[in-house]
Length: 391
Ligand SMILES: Cc1cc2nc3c(=O)[nH]c(=O)nc-3n(C[C@H](O)[C@H](O)[C@H](O)COP(=O)(O)OP(=O)(O)OC[C@H]3O[C@@H](n4cnc5c(N)ncnc54)[C@H](O)[C@@H]3O)c2cc1C
Image: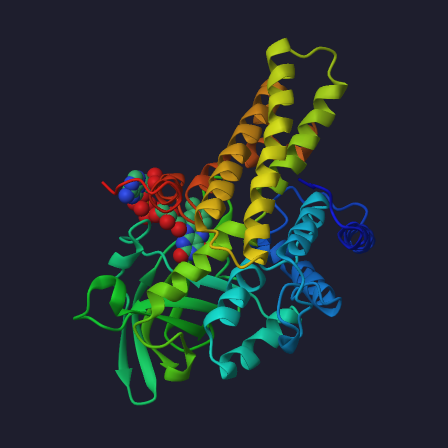
């Protein structure tokens, strides 16, 4: 088995790393995940947008797409290499929703007209997207959602409330899953919409997460008129489109293993400078660096299967759940290695690692909920991967 990168992939990593290093200001001390620039959108949004346009100009936001839509038909491995480099330099600009999840979903399910309208703008880094799937009463059990879309001539009229919508306050467009077939079985009565967030009737209201950041939102839809041509995959086919979207989300969209690895390197750097380190912590740090490699290989395996056109849902679930739980373990050891200093936040001159430790610890709790919880991932591995009977 050959685990090495091809010479083309190595060359791309060097090119991407050099480019990002040149673009990120030398004093850049962004303490969050590179892809989570929404948490401080006021502060970092314009840099993220400028960076997205630069990545777009290089053709790096459409690496994996077919050539007919401006892509290079490259393996998803290239996208992961880019994500690793962006994460290493904590450089925002990669829209995990638009580029990571929505574009591949459009390529697979959308009409030619929809592809022509949206893909070019995503490839150029001109627009940011968000996902309006979850609702206050529908998270893991997404098919129980209550947002309604009622046909009216050439339009659907959407009414309802979405919750936990990451980045809606900075995004331009969103995808919405809403009920169009009230009398159909619940999975079969849903449609998948592309919605311009400037459409009248949409209200975005902040939710502050436990780390103190405005990362996600409630989004209210009051008589929001959306053209019927914005339904992806056909009316009442939204569940299948959403399942496709979630596979891309788990597989390659969010490089949580790279977040864990990058932060662990910071913790190791700090640990090297301390005068003494408890032997148990030394061993746990060694263990975690091994686990970072496992997380990376699981993610690469899902990407490789995606490249080969193989079904990859259970493998993507393994990769996502492993990386999410790994990120929590790394965040926890960061607190232990820093000891009493771990309570100091950004702004304190005594705070090691620019005060990142408590933020990482608190933010990592959400990793095992966002993009589907670890329990739901385990359920999928059990049923789709292992063929075990359902409860
Ligand atoms: C940081 C973050 C960002 C997010 N961003 C978005 C976003 O951009 N767009 C969006 O639409 N949503 C987003 N979400 C919402 C996310 O998708 C939901 O939180 C997730 O699907 C879980 O749903 P819930 O919160 O309603 O919890 P619930 O579904 O109520 O689950 C609560 C607990 O019960 C467990 N559980 C539920 N059902 C089962 C079962 N059948 N078997 C075993 N255990 C079960 C869950 O694993 C969980 O631990 C985000 C969430 C977080 C934390």
